[in-house]
Image (cartoon, rainbow, N blue to C red; front, side):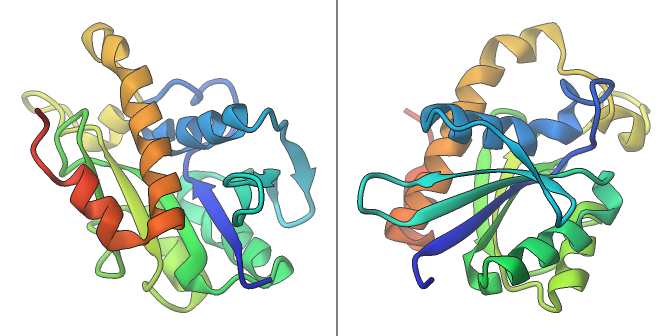
Length: 194
Protein backbone atom coordinates (compact mmCIF):
# COMPACT_ATOMS: atom_id res chain seq x y z
CA UNK A 1 0.00 0.00 0.00
CA UNK A 2 1.90 3.00 -1.29
CA UNK A 3 0.02 5.52 0.83
CA UNK A 4 0.27 3.88 4.25
CA UNK A 5 2.45 5.49 6.92
CA UNK A 6 3.57 4.08 10.27
CA UNK A 7 3.67 6.78 12.95
CA UNK A 8 5.43 5.56 16.10
CA UNK A 9 5.55 7.32 19.46
CA UNK A 10 8.48 6.20 21.58
CA UNK A 11 8.10 5.82 25.33
CA UNK A 12 7.89 3.36 28.19
CA UNK A 13 4.84 1.20 28.96
CA UNK A 14 2.62 1.42 32.02
CA UNK A 15 1.07 4.12 34.22
CA UNK A 16 4.36 4.86 36.04
CA UNK A 17 5.79 6.44 32.87
CA UNK A 18 2.69 7.85 31.17
CA UNK A 19 3.22 11.50 32.13
CA UNK A 20 7.03 11.55 31.91
CA UNK A 21 9.17 13.53 29.49
CA UNK A 22 10.39 10.30 27.85
CA UNK A 23 6.79 9.53 26.84
CA UNK A 24 6.00 12.74 24.98
CA UNK A 25 6.17 10.79 21.69
CA UNK A 26 3.33 8.55 22.88
CA UNK A 27 1.34 11.61 23.97
CA UNK A 28 1.55 12.83 20.35
CA UNK A 29 0.28 9.45 19.10
CA UNK A 30 -2.64 9.69 21.55
CA UNK A 31 -3.45 13.15 20.16
CA UNK A 32 -3.39 11.87 16.56
CA UNK A 33 -5.70 8.97 17.51
CA UNK A 34 -8.07 11.31 19.39
CA UNK A 35 -8.35 13.54 16.32
CA UNK A 36 -9.57 10.51 14.38
CA UNK A 37 -11.77 9.12 17.18
CA UNK A 38 -9.75 5.91 17.01
CA UNK A 39 -9.02 3.63 19.97
CA UNK A 40 -5.96 1.44 20.39
CA UNK A 41 -5.88 -2.33 20.08
CA UNK A 42 -3.10 -4.77 20.87
CA UNK A 43 -1.15 -5.94 17.81
CA UNK A 44 0.89 -9.14 17.70
CA UNK A 45 3.96 -7.10 16.70
CA UNK A 46 4.32 -5.97 20.33
CA UNK A 47 2.54 -2.64 20.17
CA UNK A 48 -0.82 -0.97 20.61
CA UNK A 49 -2.05 0.47 17.34
CA UNK A 50 -4.85 2.65 16.02
CA UNK A 51 -5.59 2.92 12.31
CA UNK A 52 -7.13 5.90 10.56
CA UNK A 53 -6.77 8.26 7.64
CA UNK A 54 -4.92 11.55 7.38
CA UNK A 55 -8.17 12.88 5.89
CA UNK A 56 -10.93 11.27 3.83
CA UNK A 57 -9.30 9.85 0.72
CA UNK A 58 -5.83 10.65 2.04
CA UNK A 59 -2.98 8.46 3.22
CA UNK A 60 -3.66 5.74 5.78
CA UNK A 61 -1.99 6.16 9.18
CA UNK A 62 -1.00 3.30 11.45
CA UNK A 63 -0.45 4.96 14.85
CA UNK A 64 1.69 2.85 17.15
CA UNK A 65 2.92 2.76 20.74
CA UNK A 66 5.41 -0.08 21.37
CA UNK A 67 4.66 -2.22 24.45
CA UNK A 68 8.38 -2.54 25.13
CA UNK A 69 10.64 -0.22 27.09
CA UNK A 70 12.22 2.67 25.21
CA UNK A 71 15.65 1.10 24.71
CA UNK A 72 14.18 -1.93 22.90
CA UNK A 73 11.58 -0.13 20.75
CA UNK A 74 13.09 -1.35 17.49
CA UNK A 75 11.60 -4.84 17.43
CA UNK A 76 7.95 -3.74 17.49
CA UNK A 77 8.64 -0.93 15.00
CA UNK A 78 10.36 -3.26 12.52
CA UNK A 79 7.65 -5.92 13.01
CA UNK A 80 4.88 -3.40 12.27
CA UNK A 81 6.73 -2.03 9.23
CA UNK A 82 7.04 -5.58 7.90
CA UNK A 83 3.43 -6.52 8.74
CA UNK A 84 1.99 -3.45 6.97
CA UNK A 85 4.68 -3.50 4.23
CA UNK A 86 5.83 0.06 4.98
CA UNK A 87 9.35 1.15 3.94
CA UNK A 88 11.60 3.03 6.38
CA UNK A 89 11.04 6.35 4.56
CA UNK A 90 7.37 6.19 5.64
CA UNK A 91 8.07 5.22 9.26
CA UNK A 92 7.81 8.45 11.27
CA UNK A 93 9.31 8.23 14.76
CA UNK A 94 8.12 10.80 17.31
CA UNK A 95 10.41 11.12 20.32
CA UNK A 96 11.67 13.35 23.11
CA UNK A 97 14.90 15.26 22.51
CA UNK A 98 17.16 16.54 25.31
CA UNK A 99 19.22 18.76 22.99
CA UNK A 100 16.23 20.82 21.86
CA UNK A 101 14.69 23.39 24.24
CA UNK A 102 11.31 22.55 25.73
CA UNK A 103 8.37 23.67 23.57
CA UNK A 104 10.41 23.40 20.34
CA UNK A 105 10.05 20.94 17.46
CA UNK A 106 12.66 19.81 14.95
CA UNK A 107 12.15 17.41 12.05
CA UNK A 108 14.73 15.46 10.12
CA UNK A 109 15.32 12.26 8.20
CA UNK A 110 18.34 10.11 8.95
CA UNK A 111 21.48 11.11 10.77
CA UNK A 112 22.72 9.93 14.13
CA UNK A 113 20.69 9.00 17.18
CA UNK A 114 22.19 11.73 19.39
CA UNK A 115 22.49 9.31 22.30
CA UNK A 116 18.77 8.49 22.21
CA UNK A 117 18.64 4.74 22.85
CA UNK A 118 15.12 4.33 21.47
CA UNK A 119 16.08 5.94 18.15
CA UNK A 120 19.30 3.88 18.10
CA UNK A 121 17.32 0.66 18.54
CA UNK A 122 14.79 1.57 15.84
CA UNK A 123 17.60 2.33 13.36
CA UNK A 124 19.26 -0.99 14.17
CA UNK A 125 16.01 -2.97 13.81
CA UNK A 126 15.01 -1.26 10.55
CA UNK A 127 18.53 -1.72 9.20
CA UNK A 128 18.78 1.98 8.34
CA UNK A 129 18.75 5.37 10.10
CA UNK A 130 16.95 6.85 7.07
CA UNK A 131 13.50 7.37 8.58
CA UNK A 132 11.73 10.67 9.35
CA UNK A 133 11.76 11.89 12.94
CA UNK A 134 9.67 14.45 14.77
CA UNK A 135 11.86 15.51 17.68
CA UNK A 136 9.97 17.07 20.57
CA UNK A 137 12.18 19.27 22.71
CA UNK A 138 12.25 18.55 26.44
CA UNK A 139 15.42 20.52 27.19
CA UNK A 140 18.33 19.59 29.41
CA UNK A 141 17.98 19.10 33.17
CA UNK A 142 18.78 22.01 35.45
CA UNK A 143 22.00 21.98 37.47
CA UNK A 144 23.63 18.60 37.81
CA UNK A 145 20.58 16.38 37.56
CA UNK A 146 21.30 13.19 35.64
CA UNK A 147 19.63 13.30 32.20
CA UNK A 148 18.51 9.67 32.75
CA UNK A 149 16.51 10.80 35.81
CA UNK A 150 15.27 13.95 34.06
CA UNK A 151 13.63 12.08 31.17
CA UNK A 152 11.82 9.75 33.61
CA UNK A 153 10.40 12.67 35.65
CA UNK A 154 6.96 14.12 35.01
CA UNK A 155 6.84 17.51 33.31
CA UNK A 156 7.13 20.43 35.73
CA UNK A 157 4.19 22.63 36.70
CA UNK A 158 5.12 25.44 34.31
CA UNK A 159 5.78 22.98 31.48
CA UNK A 160 2.40 21.31 31.99
CA UNK A 161 0.65 24.59 31.10
CA UNK A 162 2.29 24.57 27.65
CA UNK A 163 2.46 20.80 27.12
CA UNK A 164 -0.98 20.40 25.45
CA UNK A 165 0.02 23.03 22.85
CA UNK A 166 3.39 21.34 22.27
CA UNK A 167 1.72 17.93 21.81
CA UNK A 168 -0.86 19.43 19.43
CA UNK A 169 1.88 21.20 17.46
CA UNK A 170 3.84 17.94 17.17
CA UNK A 171 0.70 16.16 15.90
CA UNK A 172 0.26 18.97 13.34
CA UNK A 173 3.90 18.50 12.32
CA UNK A 174 3.36 14.77 11.75
CA UNK A 175 0.28 15.47 9.62
CA UNK A 176 2.12 18.10 7.55
CA UNK A 177 5.11 15.80 7.08
CA UNK A 178 2.85 13.02 5.74
CA UNK A 179 0.75 15.42 3.64
CA UNK A 180 3.33 17.74 2.11
CA UNK A 181 6.73 16.24 2.88
CA UNK A 182 9.66 16.88 5.19
CA UNK A 183 10.76 20.21 3.69
CA UNK A 184 7.30 21.78 4.04
CA UNK A 185 7.10 20.58 7.65
CA UNK A 186 10.58 21.89 8.42
CA UNK A 187 9.76 25.28 6.90
CA UNK A 188 6.66 25.51 9.08
CA UNK A 189 8.16 24.29 12.35
CA UNK A 190 11.78 25.44 12.16
CA UNK A 191 10.87 29.08 11.58
CA UNK A 192 11.10 31.34 14.64
CA UNK A 193 7.75 31.58 16.41
CA UNK A 194 5.93 34.86 16.12
